[in-house]
Amino acid sequence: MINLNPWLHAPTWYIAYSGGLDSTVLLHLLADYARNHASPPLRAIHVHHGLQSAADAWPAHCQVVCDSLGIELQVIHVQVSPGASLEQAARDARYGAFEQVLGPGDILFTGQHRDDQAETLLFRLLRGAGLRGLAAMPRQRVLGQGSLVRPLLGCARQQVQDYANAQRLTWIEDPSNTDTHFARNYLRGEVFPRLQQRWPQAGQNLARAADHLGEALGLLDELAQADLARAEQGAPTAWSALPSLDLAALVTLSPARQRNALQYWLSQRTRLPDTRHWAGWADLRDAGADAQPVWPLADGRLLRSHGRIWWLSGDWLQPPAGQLAWVDPGQPLLLPGNGSVRLVGAARLDGLRVAYRQGGEILEIPGRGRRDLKRLLNEQQVPHFLRSRLPLLYQGERLLAVANLPGPGQADCQLHWQLPTNAQGLS
Image 1 (tube, rainbow, N blue to C red):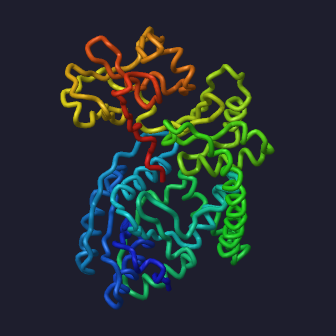
Image 2: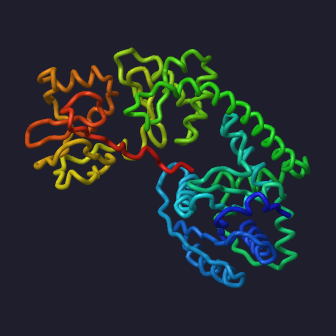
Image 3: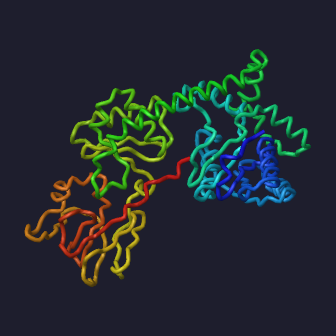
């Protein structure tokens, strides 16, 4: 029914086990394979969303099934953030939990099948999705440090049901699955059966269309990679850890290729905006040379500074904490919400502290005298958004060094800044 050979060398196999029909069938298939073949350790994960009282009994059911199969079960409780789409918020919480569990190279198997693929395509068509959305669910994709794999994607729902009946499996029926106020449930319960009455091969044909769209998306991704190769060059060495693109390289492309390249680049970092919100890109691109435009997105923001666009997320979305005393300059100093710094080349110094710009700072530079820090930052073309969180090293009230800037400061006192995280754990 499924081919597991491509993933036999993974350190660990996990299965997303809700207790429902699809994941129950997949659990039994994986357990049967593990009994009869050399394979990685198999473990199950059940995510409790806390959204309905009926779900409180599901972990116990899952534990009984896993015990009968000799499979370790991990139950994870998550908080679902309130929002416009409860389905999306629950999915985000669930996949966030999976991502935290997976180690390097681990595999998470999920139970989506061919009919789920067809419903996803139909759902996204009705939402006016672009090609990236219509390509629907890939058979395998990166998830955290591991990969998510859907081995049942080639199987029809009826095949899954028939297997469960033949094996006399027991599973949980989620009462929310019959609530047609949820869009997917309405498609599954009301629309899809009517389509299949008129076109019995509807599920198979829609899934095949999703495969074709996925192939077309692959070609557009190759084009995006080629277009981005030049735009990713030229980042200032001191800030190369921050994702950025050369704006001049992007604007040589047609508007459609600009969007395609940015969609590919942003898809690895954030949930993509819908068509209406792509006006934010035009505003960012076309703003005046002295402007500092910002394009807010779901999981971060794009900014423009010194001819480049920069992606900020994670710690970068919050201001850093105030000044800190540096008790032991021989060891790196952790800056809450702002990475860490280490001191290189200085003799033993006492009374050090790290602080941030307040305005009016003066730095003494060997051979150049006392210089205004603001002017120095302009000379070094430090991006505007970096300046308020650039660590400054003081001894008492004297400014000794500015992090990561070549030249300024005492020649024997260099401050190296490990920039803060720029990741959101995107699923």
